[in-house]
Image 1 (tube, rainbow, N blue to C red):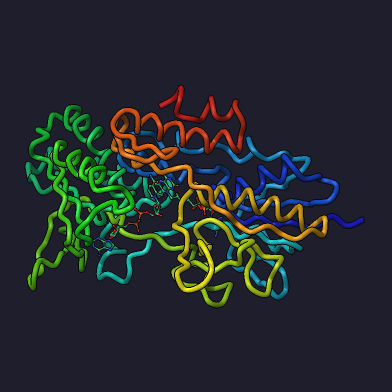
Image 2 (tube, rainbow, N blue to C red):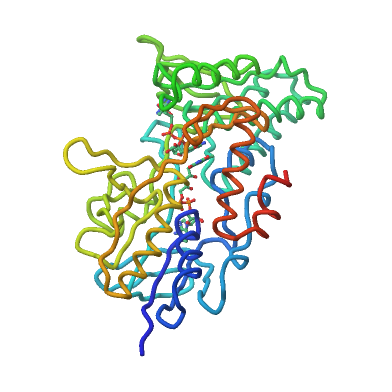
Length: 403
Ligand code: FAD
Ligand code: NAD
């Protein structure tokens, strides 16, 4: 009796949730599950802005995948996936070749600079533990250089993009920059932090009064926000913007690009019809012509309905986790020969943190601001760990008792 080979690529929110749910619900006598991930650890992508701002150490945002993997049920391989051959049903990795009966692609997101001149070379991003660590190192390097040079420019930080990641990163900086200044004996008033957003409105998914709360938070913390201002280029002095017909430099010794993400580049190399690393998936999250391949998380464009008005769901951890749960259920259905179920997103709300003690959000249908929003964010962050690793992992790695 042959067990069905399930191969899960990526141990982010979508992949790890798939494996956790398979382990909880499905029998090892029918399934042979292999999880492949670049690192030995899972990282909470949703905490990376805190690493980038030096609010937490990177290892606080990670846990060993071995904490999750039940070795009786799942084989974990630390390797980088290099190619997917959907016709041969084989995946190439740095640890060799793997075949599968059912494939789950959950390879996550990367930064997208939209071809803006100089951006890839001259700006940091917040998309992985490595890139987030590099941001905080850059700030420290520049602030320490100021102690030698006395040049205020060394204290300038410019953030491109005033979306969720931009706001949450700036929120953390409002806590950590005054601390760093105190530590190094630098006057905080000399530090210039500027955020640049192309659209006239920020955080448009919230009502205006909540977006205004976030804008006022920045102002109160000496962070300048430029709206309706598109970034056109980056260089080693800062970010170039267009104001009217004129190009202007917004100085930044530290330059951080938070203005866009895309799905994994392997998606274009492996599948047809992929745009910005995302493929349109069928309602059950499999791809057209391949009921044995599920694409979930940030590599998937799952539509929120049918017909002309249908839009892809945003790429969020909340959605990636729900996709992982459904995929485990659907794998169970395939084994039993039962019809797969469609994805139905349950929106539990959204909180945008503004440092460790402030934020804005709508949770369980209610607006929250300030400390309540910050507490809600901690609960959301801890719940993500609880859902995968249970109470022990949630207590040791979550944010209710730690950090
Ligand atoms: P990822 O979390 O990106 O996981 C992909 C995994 O695949 C990673 O472990 C990666 O190492 C691995 N991998 C990648 N390539 C390879 C390869 N070639 N071989 C092997 N392994 C590979 N969403 C929310 O809902 N709420 C939030 O509060 C929130 N905050 C965020 C804060 C920040 C700073 C950022 C950047 C994003 C935030 N998001 C948030 C969005 C959220 O992080 C993503 O939507 C989510 O991480 C997507 O999950 P995923 O499993 O698809 O991918
Ligand atoms: P995003 O695409 O949501 O926001 C990028 C911002 O950059 C946009 O406001 C856009 O107008 C701006 N921008 C783009 N090009 C620009 C340019 N040339 N010049 C100036 N501004 C420019 O990206 P993100 O904030 O990284 O979020 C990615 C995903 O992760 C989203 O789905 C988001 O909802 C999710 N996320 C959620 C949370 C949360 O729930 N707390 C936190 C972070 C990220």
